[in-house]
Length: 252
Image 1 (tube, rainbow, N blue to C red):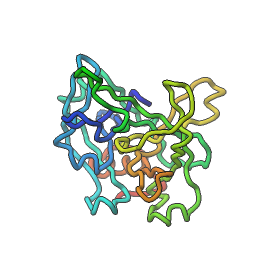
Image 2: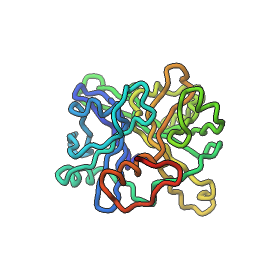
Image 3: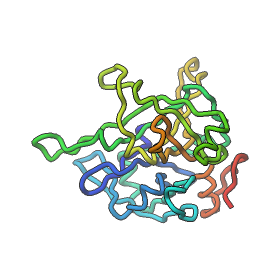
Image 4: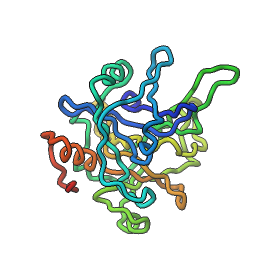
């Protein structure tokens, strides 16, 4: 999951958001939250070699911009240009079409994880010019009741609401549970489903179900995402890519 996920930095430097890389046919995409890309001109992606950074270039697609606080979709799709793709491929992998869980039926079980780059887990190391950032990986359970969605004006055909138990967060460096971080900065990260049957086959390949966009101020115990069906719908609409159509939601 981490190899498909990048942090989006400002030149401060500071983590402003997270992004996920996808490839469909010969098209390469960077997906993130629309509110992250509101500051697109200031954003950079780190590369692993010699502290390099790159400014992604390409064409941006999204559903008509509305008042951001009321944007239930909050997704931007960038079709990356041919100049930046080779540089990104030196550091990152791109998810393939089979890795996208369109038409996914969410289960109220802890089969899901999100992985992103919280702002509070990044800093300039003391007495150095080295920028250090740690990814955050968290197990989560989607909400299943319709009233969970209606209370915050979200549509389960478009969105997914999952739990964030901040007081029971696993620290992978210390190998113990503790208090998790603020989630500012993870907007644009992926929500991944791991089929429990994969444990028995020994081949674990998580699938991308959604892009997480919102950690509500009024309820810090949840995090909201937009289904991958919306992203593939945007790609189908604007690029006329031959890709399976969602049976759950359609982009007009």
